[in-house]
Amino acid sequence: MKSTTLSLASTLACIADFYDGCKVGCEGFEGYRKSADLTKFIRCAGELENGQFINPRHTIFVDLGCADGRVNLLMSYFVKKSIGIEIDPDILGEYQSHAAELGCRLTENQLTVPPANISLFAGNSLADETFQRIRAHTGVSFKDVDIFYTYITLHDAFAAKIAAQAKVGSLYLVYGFNKILPRYDGLELLIADVASQGIATLYQKTA
Image 1 (tube, one colour):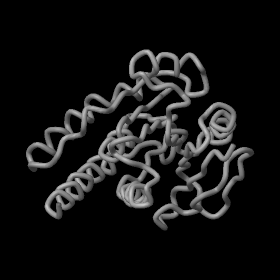
Image 2: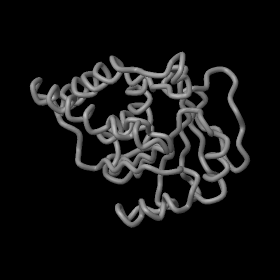
Image 3: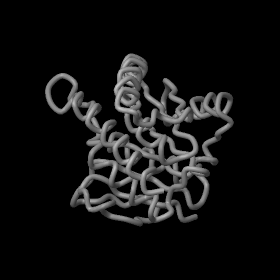
Image 4: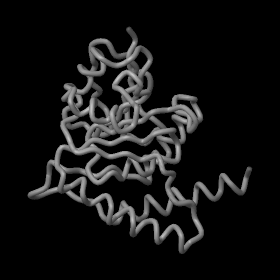
């Protein structure tokens, strides 16, 4: 068990090192597109697993603005299904080349390649039609999702959709907040600073 844990830690560190080396959009023309710090995010995922908020045998994870799918790839080791939605097909198209390059690096270092549980879709995360396509391809409906994730953009619109349509008990993980945290109708603040990284806040649908 200990060797398995060490192997996973090495795998996740390799993934973070790879993607953190190709961050985009922090300033300039692509300022709207910001990349998650996967080195920090690993600790957030670990706390969610240790707190039994996610489970690799049961949890359905959806990234509502997945860009090149890097968070989906990382979360694939922690959940049953890792689903991503990106409105820009060109950005989403970067997933295959990045994942292939990363896969070679993992294999060369005798680390664990990602599970075959990742499904990415081009579309609008606020549109019911997008989730109809997801259900047709994966069997997962909006009400099946256990944890939704976003990187701040449209966080309030996504919160309203989750409050109105998601199942009671579903979780909403928002990346990008630090000291000033929003409140959403129908969602309860569970963890203000997940894993004390200053990057992620966890909410839950209460009714």
